Length: 258
Ligand code: ADP
Ligand code: MG
Picture (spheres, rainbow, N blue to C red):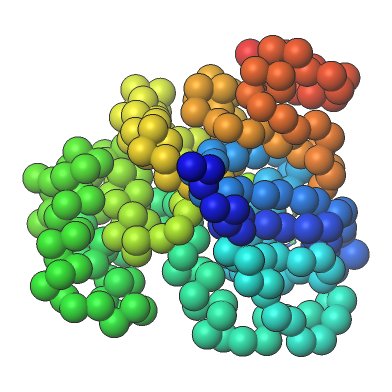
């Protein structure tokens, strides 16, 4: 039986975003269906983080559509005055697209368990005992089940990032958004985080990953997007993008990141 057609988890169409006079995204399209792993690659300043932040409405945008599971974001105003119209919709989308940041962003004054439990309890109003069970499960899953009572400063960078991933998972989101999740880590700690991300990909999680790690992108992506100065210069399956890049700029970028 063919699967019923379902709307993409995220669909962004013709997105434009400026910071004042600086136009950072100049008409970008991104689609992630359920189970897709989309990697965003490109030089520093090309707009990767901005695009990811626009996906879950952490950044405003001036033009274009953002659709979450077939539900278009409703706006009021236009251009630089455009804002999401419905705070409940923003909350629903944001909590369904969990973001994992380069700098982990854990609360220093909370234990690891409290960090993971915080948003499901306070933002989603879920039952504390159930959230604790889930939090312990996800901390086990990322391999730091023994660190529940530790504080972030007592953990290595790799362990902190795995805690941040567990925190994202504990929201039971539709998709995970990663912004350079391994960039702040020493090479030996990078691998433990890459392994967790690979396991999530193998489980069929929907993910959009901004990464400088071409090997990981080649290994786990269903689709790779190369951003150049706010436009998609080339995109496609990883074999094509890494194996037979068409654009001169992409070829240059890949040879510089070898
Ligand atoms: P990338 O993640 O690909 O390195 P970014 O999306 O962070 O790129 O940034 C794209 C451009 O937008 C850069 O020129 C950057 O300086 C600019 N930019 C990013 N965030 C802001 C901001 N909050 N205010 C002004 N300019 C910004
Ligand atoms: Mg960035």
